[in-house]
Image (cartoon, helix red, strand yellow):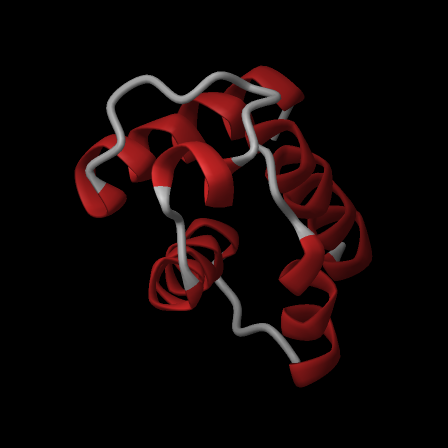
Length: 84
């Protein structure tokens, strides 16, 4: 997937699953939208579906410091490259 596709899918997940309509790409999700650990686990599940594969514990740990949509997109891009 190209970056624009990843970004589009992530924003769709936020609209449908996390119920955050239009987060800014560099907004701190925790501070501005009260994005918490439950939301993060749900997002990781959706990322697994998006990639069509499960994530390892280490890959999940890497996600714990992510705070913005752009960082999520970077994370998905790096996972996608590793999985190829």
